[in-house]
Length: 510
Image (cartoon, rainbow, N blue to C red; front, top):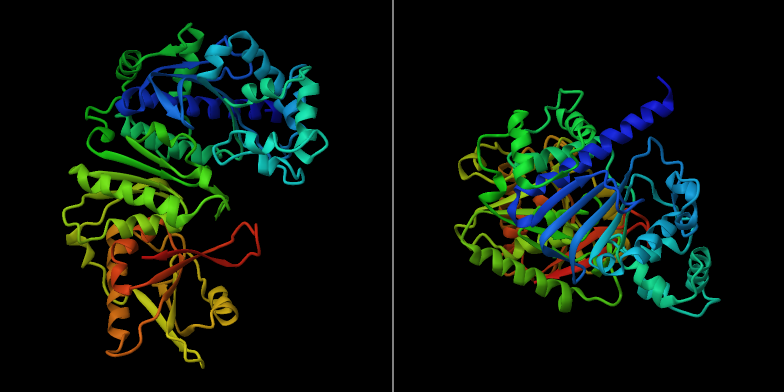
C-alpha cells in the first residue's frame, strides 16, 4: 500500500478519535455540549469537527457558543509553525488559500458569530524555533498574544509580522487584523496516535461508553462515524448519540463516572490539557501566568497564583462530596494544592487523574492498602557539608535519579545548606516505580517519619530545600503531609533549557 494512502488512513483515524472525544461531552452534563458535528460545510478550513454549547461556555473571559476544529495528523515532524506558515497554503496542504486567508473569509462572512466562536488548528507539527517571533506570539492557550503582536512600530520585530500578514490579506487596519486573530487557537505539537487513543478511552469511560480494548487494532467508533457520514448523518445531540451507541452496543449500563464526583481541573501546561474545560465542573486555568516552566515577570506567586490555589482548595473542602482532580500543572502547583488540602481536613475523598504510559489512571489512596507496602521503601543517603549552615537539602528520586544534578547545584549555589539527604525509591527510580496512590502515601509517610527522627532536640531549624523528580500525584500527596517539615523551598529543573538548564527556586512554603 502506498505511503500516501497509509498517511491518509492514519489521518482519518486520528480525526475520528478526536471527534469522539468531543462527542463524549454530550453525555457529560457539565461540559454544556449541546451538539457535535463532523465534516461540516459552513466554515471551510475549520470544518472537520464542530462543537456547540448551550448555555455558552467561558473561554479567556468571553462567552463561546461554537468551536470549529481543523484536525491534521502528520506521520513526521518535517515542518513547524512559523509566522510565514500562517500565509503559506502549502503548510496546510492547500493550493490557493492560506490559514489566515481561510480565517479571514469566515470573519468577513459573519462577524457576529465569528466573535462568539473559536477556531482551532489541531496539528501534530510543533513550533519552528528558528523563527524568533513565533514562540513569543503563541500563548499557552494557543491564541495569538495580541499585546505582543501589536507592540512597536511598523519596523519593529512584530511590526514586520503585522505588515506581512496584513499585506497577505490585502488589509491595512491593525484593528481588523486583531479582531480576526482573537478567536484563533493554534494547538501545535498535539498528541500522537497512541496518546490520543488513551485520551479517548478516558473520555469514553467517564461518558458511560465502552473504551477501546488495548489489544484491539481497529476501533468500532472510527468505522461508525464514517458510515454515519456516508448516510448523511453528521450532526448529533445527546439523544442521537445515546440511541446510536445503544444500537451499536457501545453503551455501559451504568451511569457515567463524571456524575458521581465534583471534578476539578488545574492547568498551567497546555499540552495534553487543551480542552480540559470540557471534562470538569471547575477549572482553574493558570496558563497565562507562565511561559513554559517559568512564571512571567508580570505575575507573582505570592500575590496572584497562591491566592487562587487557596481559594480553590477552600471550595474543594466545602464541597462535601468525592473530588476528582486533573493536575495538568507544574510540580510546584500540585505540591501546593496538596499542602492547602492537608490531611488534617479529615474525610476528604480525593482521587487524582494521573497520566501514565498506559494512559490516564485514577489514583486514590486506600487506608487498608497503605500498610501493605513493606519497608524499606526508600534508600536514604546523607552527607554533611563543612560549613555551619543550618538549612537542609532534600532530593527525591522517583521517576529518575537527580542526585548528581542536585549535588552540583547545592555545592555551587546553596551556601546555607549544612546537610544533604537524598532518597531514592526502591527498587530503583523509573517511570513505573510508583504502583498507585496507596504506594505514594506509604512512601510519603515513611519519608516524613525518617526526617522527623533525624532532627535532634535543640538543633537549629533551618529551611528545607526540596528537589523532586516524581509524578504530579506524588507531589500532591506529599503536599498533604508537608507541614512537619517546616519552612520549605521547592525547586524545579529547567528541562527545556530556556534559561540555563539548571534548578530554579519556585515557591516558599508556607
